[in-house]
Image (cartoon, rainbow, N blue to C red; front, side, top):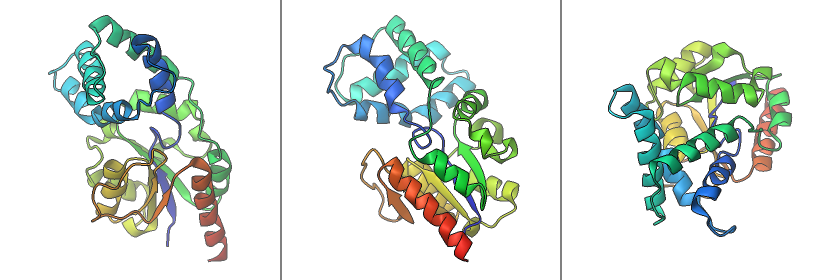
Length: 240
C-alpha cells in the first residue's frame, strides 16, 4: 500500500523547457516554430556530469556554461556559440527559473494528497538552487524541509538507488510503500523501480521507453492526467 508520494523537481513540477527556450531565442534567432526538444533534453542529460566536473575542479562555471550549451546545440546540428553568448544564455535561463510556476492542476492534487500521504522531494543538483525552485513553486505548503533530499547534500545522485533508500529512512517507510513521480525515464522511473519503489512517469515530452526491462506503474502525458492520477490515489486511500 502506498503511504508516501515523492516528486522530482525539474520538468516534473514545472515546465523547464519554457525558460530554456526563452533564454536561447535571442542568441540563436531561430524560426518561432522550431522545436528545440533534442537540444533541451541533451542539455538536461549533462547536468550530473557538469556539476561533478565543477566539484572536482575540472571545469570552471564559465567552462561548464560554454561546453554544456554547445554540446546540446551540436545534438541538433545547431551552430556553436561563443563564451559571451553562452554566459548571456546562462544568466537569462537562471532569471527565468526564478519565475517558474507549478504545472496546471498540481496545486489541487497536492492539496488533496497532503491530507492523506506523506510527501517528499528527491532532486539532483546544487542544494541552494534546487531549494530556491522549491520555494518559488511554494512547495513548502505541502512538503517539509526534512522531506527534501538534494544530490549535493546527500552525496548521492539519481539514478543511484541509494538516494531513494535514504528517503525511505527519512519517511520511515518501506520501499514498497513509496511512489516516485518524475519526467525522466532513466533518472526517475528506472532508478525508482530499482530501489523497489512504485514509479509514475510524467512523460509530457512524449519520449520513447529506452529499456523495456523497467516498466512504470503508471504513465501520464500531460499535467491534467497527472492531476487525475494523483487525485485517484486520494480516492483509493479514503476507500482503503
